[in-house]
Image (cartoon, rainbow, N blue to C red):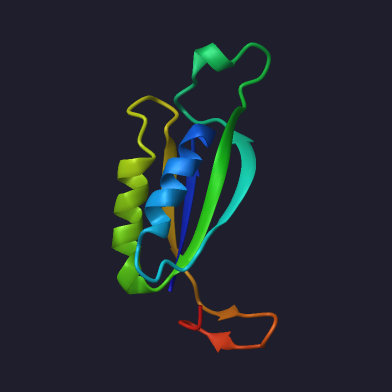
Length: 108
């Protein structure tokens, strides 16, 4: 099981959500607002702060779905401009569904 975390431009969220929901057995995702900056600074949005608004996408997925999800995010959320975002993939050791207490690596 892996966590796929992506930071994308807010205006790409709807298009990305639609593409991911079209996947068979898509496990779902969490979305939150965040701000940040990296090495590529977008000057047009820096009047008083270096922080740029992003959407943080978090997906916990079985290993066999990770490459497909990664490719969808990479292709759909790409603006072909600096600041388009980032994707990270991490191992998940264990997860527990709070409502049922189910614990394991592939219950979700």
